[in-house]
Image (cartoon, rainbow, N blue to C red; front, side):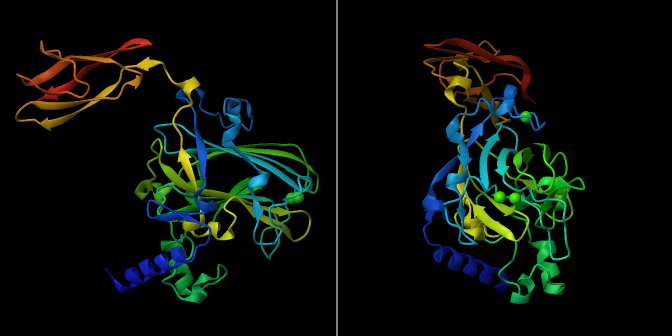
Length: 378
Ligand SMILES: [Ca+2]
Ligand SMILES: [Ca+2]
Ligand SMILES: [Ca+2]
């Protein structure tokens, strides 16, 4: 372990120890006293279509949506009493089992949509900001604590700042500033070195709004994004997506930067701590939920297999059936059968075993799953 890495680890520990109002979860503290939020699992045949229309989200139960009352204007002292006449939002997050993607629906009403007037002192655009830490590693992800303090200024042109930016910013967790609405077809500012995460198919987006700068109105932003355990400057080929698994908890939070014709009027955020924008230890815990009961099949046979020992022709079969099951019947295609749930079977002959079938039964009925030409022994 290098001194630098050791120092970094020590700083991480210290920063975690200083975090108030948080709870340890798997070795990591989370914002909001460890309160758990939920990510809705869409069935595969009802994935959202990214078109800015919200009908495809109507199947999502209400308790998956998070509104203005959960936000806190922590930076500018506005607190949790956010005037719905100034800003009113609703955020819903979804996922689809098997895809490393988060779907987000952002619905917002603002008394003054501020956009399209960039100036040299920085952007003046209403922003919806998301920070995501797909493997819940925690820790800083914009400014590396091992760099000199002068490197922490995002306007800096020092070697230290640029080295930090190119090797660290957004690499193990990501920050997106979504423009609401877009300007000159720019929809996102990635605060990090991996601008490519804002490109299709790493992400996708569609807006729906009908107002001019300075007007009030309603905006819908529908998007997906891909969380990364490792998102380097070089591009997606060398990146490592966060593997999203059912019942995993990820780090996630959002904030809204509301400009209403002047200075920023708020930096309202779900984490109740604005450090969420650059330090994943201040993100909220979001669980990747299983399918709600109404979307589950009553019974469905499913299984996988692993070679235990090719020389002995020994194969382990894993039942992965869905539903309530009381009886398993395996037909290995070689004249042998088993009634175990997860049998280990020794085949007598090598070759391609053409048909292997699991039949399951339960109170809701029965189902069979065959794998053709998949179990092969050389
Ligand atoms: Ca849609
Ligand atoms: Ca406003
Ligand atoms: Ca505004």
